[in-house]
Length: 456
Length: 63
View 1: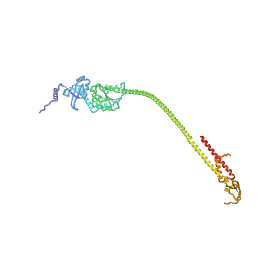
View 2 (view 1 turned 30 degrees about the vertical axis):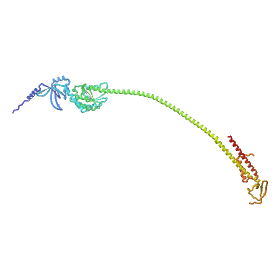
View 3 (view 1 turned 45 degrees about the horizontal axis):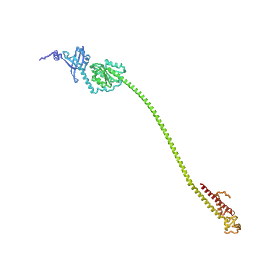
View 4 (view 1 turned 135 degrees about the vertical axis):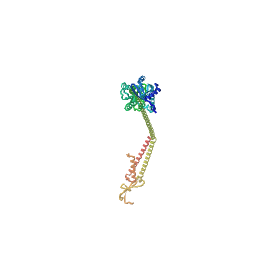
């Protein structure tokens, strides 16, 4: 049995016919991711792909012919170029084309940028949600921004006008220009933008600076889309230095802005913020200084016044006290005088009283002496004297009687005689009696005889 | 005869005379004069006493 065979040309022509019958000139709106883009002779050659849950599910070549490129550029302007960045999801109007030699491909007739923007917004939202989930969204915002940021690390693309604007503003303002700027150049668009920006940020974080500034001059939504990248945002959240952003124009906001410490709409705005902050600080400082000075002067004045018042008061007060003391002293002196006088008067009265008493007592005593004691003594004396005299009288009488009795003459009268030898009484005579002349005295005469014999 | 004697002297002399008389020490010749002296002394003393008494009375009465 012979096999029925076709030439490749026949087969390919058949496929082309089938495809032409099925798809014909019909165009379709198709979404897909731009993977790769080459340009040659004004034509754009694209590599498109699609994926579900990160797994590639379709891949196809596509072409934008030169005439179409020009038309799209006319319609979309600058956006056209930005939309056709690898990684973007795009909505194309295509026709299915089969070429006998080049095979199956899509011919792109039109582009709908709204879809891509929607995609960008969706991605952005997801990134924000993820950052929030991971606790990275507000890390920067919790940092403390230095009052003065003089040492700046600048991350951006030096060739852009925004970059130049930033530097010019910092160096040519009238408030403060003495910034120390460390520049770390990086591309901000294209395939390598994410990696380079992340690396630049990490490098910037190694400097002993006050803040990092990330800038990107104005661009389309697509241009700025790189700053919605999760990796860049995560890197920003993990920086040690506060990050200030100045990305895009007035209305653009990228995720990097949300993650950064402070967001400004343009590079120029960041520069202004920096020098105004210095100026504000300086002015605050001046104001504070002024206030301190004013306060100090006012305090001084008030203290001086207070001192003066106090001084016056004290002077017055002390004078009063002195006066009080003086009058108190005088009162005391007076009291002492009065007291002394009283005591003296009392003593005087006491003395007077004593004197009087003494006089009275003396009088009494004298009276007693005069009226009682003296007469008694006198009487006693008289009595004694009389007694004495009587005793003497009696004694005298006694003596008189004795004399009378003893008077021998009297005895003679009654007949007694007194014998004596040589005028000595016989009783007293001690000599030899014999032959002696004895005198015998009588009342009438004297007998003289010679002793012849003694008989005892 | 005026005696210039105090009472005590007069009395003492009188007592001396009495003692002599008692002891028979008086010589006979002097006997009379001794007794006379004794009498004189007694009188003198009596008068002294009398005088004293009178003076005392006089003083007392004056007071």
